[in-house]
Amino acid sequence: MNFQYGIDDHPGWKKLLLFSLQWLVVSIPPIIIIGRIIPSLQNSGIDPVVYLQKLFLITAIIMLAQVLLGHRLPLVVGPATVLLIGILASTGRTSAAINSAVIIGGVLLALLGITGLFSYLKRLFTPRVIAVILMLIAFTLSPTILQLMLGEPAVGHANLTFAILLTLAIFVAHRFLTGIWKSTLAVWAMLAGSLLFYGLFGTGSQFGDNLAALAVPSFGLPALALPDAGMLLAFLFCFLALAVNDLGSIQSVGVLLNADKMDERITRGVSITGLGNILSGLAGIIGPVNFSLSPGIIASTGCASRFALVPAAIALLGLAFSPLAIGIMGSIPPPVIGAVLLQIMTAQIAASLMLIRETQATKSFNDGLIIGLPLMLGTIVSFLPPDVVALFPAGLRPVITNGFVVGVFTVLLLEHCVYSPTPEP
Image 1 (cartoon, rainbow, N blue to C red):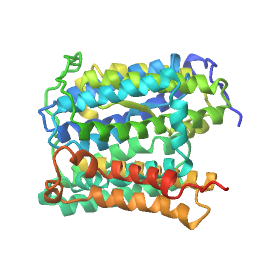
Image 2: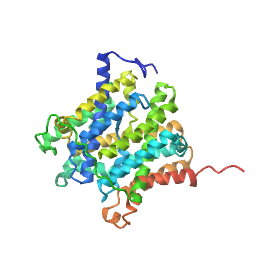
Image 3: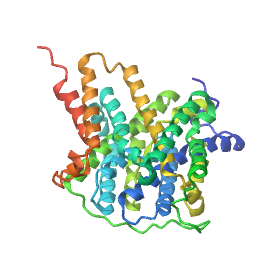
Image 4: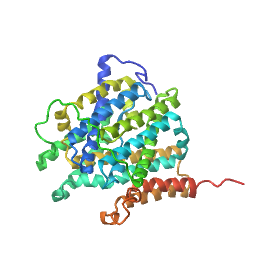
């Protein structure tokens, strides 16, 4: 595939800013969505605007580090959705323990990258395992998506109807839009959806009024506490999935662009992702990952220059210092966030199905069982009622009642033990 600009090319300033604008528009929605969900989940009095400020700042720093020092590829960086699953499974744990778990996971990921041990760990992640992990992220987030789509319990039925109709509208638009409009669909969906929601229901924003136009993000060292064994194990499973996501994103862009020295790019990229998670834990926010949506952006613009992401990262850095701008972007109603998150997770399922087809990962009935059982178990566990969850020992809840962990453990067991090929005599 031919591109107007290669990885190390420098487009002129006018074109560079135009290409960067598209990267910026694509980068913002995941930050807003995840940054709106987590402060309410941790229930620890975290100011959502301050949280988003820090999330914008760390994302910008890691994106610059990756583009200039890490994998040096045109790849979007954003908050890792898979770590949201670890936070969801840590109900009853303090934010201090969550911060420490993110730091520990980041240290291990950085060490795997720096020492080269990650190349040995990759052998566990066959195409079937990767496909299941991608789908598990979507399936085990279903309860959270449903909660967002319902919004206020008193008007849950109206919110749910609105969210479903908005989701259908998003997919209709996805079918007919092309180019930059299709790539930036999430932004237009959030904008149009919010305006329509406020017009129909007249519900006010959850964000406070009188936000400052400019303010430095609050970066005091957050509380840290050693997580218990069950919680730490759950986060380690999440970081395994994060590593797979990171690896897949780097490889997909590397193959598309026929990049050289891919082993070095992967090592440096995974290492900086690990360091980014350490920094995120110290800032009290969710950690970053390289996103797999980048090939679509590159194909639509014809620009593969990594330097096009530099102005986008600088713009994210600037947004981090404007509570007013973040407050405006963060005033998206929960049902709209739920609808957009549903579209994003559906796209992830589609990507996993394409992986199965391209790698011919299901050649037999047993191959289908390896994929099917983890998905079923993970989904069932994710919808366990709170009173059932409370019956399990507190130390084991982050593992036993975490649908993602149960699903990943099951697929690894089936793939490498139960249905592993029997060596011929």
